[in-house]
Length: 156
Image 1 (cartoon, rainbow, N blue to C red):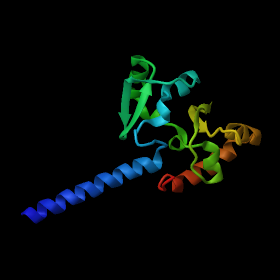
Image 2: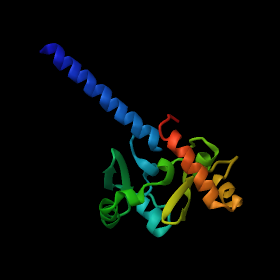
Image 3: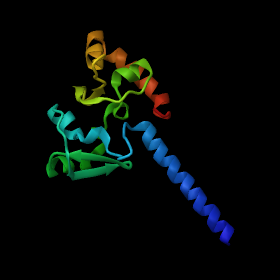
Image 4: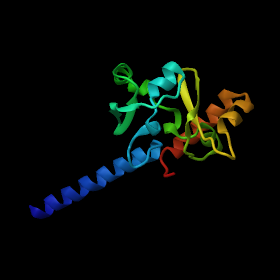
């Protein structure tokens, strides 16, 4: 009986670790498990603004935490969380097009066709400008969507 209990405990730990690892692979989160560096997904999509949320207005969806600027935003998200999920788990959209996962600057984003896309921005590269310069959202999105199918299951 003790052996069965030990095996069950070990299997539960392995399962929990696997689930957490999958969350980390498909979502641009750090050890805090907070998505979007604390920026509100409702602000991105509904207001087209990058607004930092507050831990006072927090929701969880698929074991990932999201912050909001108000109780109203939190309630909006809670009604339909899948609507407010960032494309490519919050990784850089242009990076996804190129076949790689990159962290993003949460203030660099765009809204198109009811979805929002985040981008890397640093001193060497403004990925949003590269995306816009292509002037072919459908092509970029198609390639990025295809790449995401595989990359969502890999570590950064």
